[in-house]
Image (cartoon, rainbow, N blue to C red):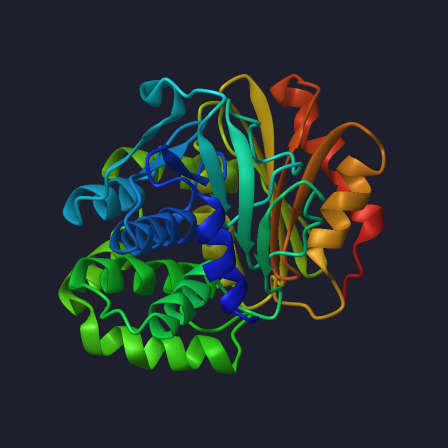
Length: 324
């Protein structure tokens, strides 16, 4: 990516107007950390950025990331957004289902997913070959020769670690270079504390509920978490099941905030779970989803009784999986 185009983009912005850095809805560690980093860069360039998101932050490691590193991110309703506000979407893309169209004009997209950027966006930097948007942010610091502050390096390393499943998935050469650079600047005690402490004591009950409903089919596992289980918690539960030697694919579901969330995990190269969830939800018009080949998620528009949900989930996803 030629970052001279970013210089040209900045010339189009009015330093007297607000710039909003928007993370995707229900943001994860990579989205929050990358928004934090972009806001710092814009501040160094003379702008007044604000960090925002839509949805909820309901995972202890995310609260620790924000609280321990003093990340000033707030829900969008707290900013009283205006049509004149300029919005930079980080770790997502306007037009995708997980990005709420907020008041203001979306002028930039910076993301590491396969996305289609609308033609009206002034600037886009999309790098699907990167394991995280955090890695892209390191390139921006290097381009401007800005020293990465310790708190931002710590946040970016957390985002990179979570997005690559502790450097075991979707990691490339630039992610490795970013890892070494960030480790020299980050507070590793804080990084390890955030990455290790992913659940609260009260959330242990979700493991019992998941195991009680689990259906195993060859090297796959299907299960339902109880209503109210946070969306991000499904990823923790799925990663736990993948530690079982006989299980290579995990499909989980839970109802929360009056929606039905689906989470998929895979260690099997024959199953691109992002494509599976798109076929199951997007193509059938019953919801939306996406992600990466080894982990994906989505939302089902309809709601089902708990007694029916596991059977429905199995019938929806199983035909699209290759199991051994």
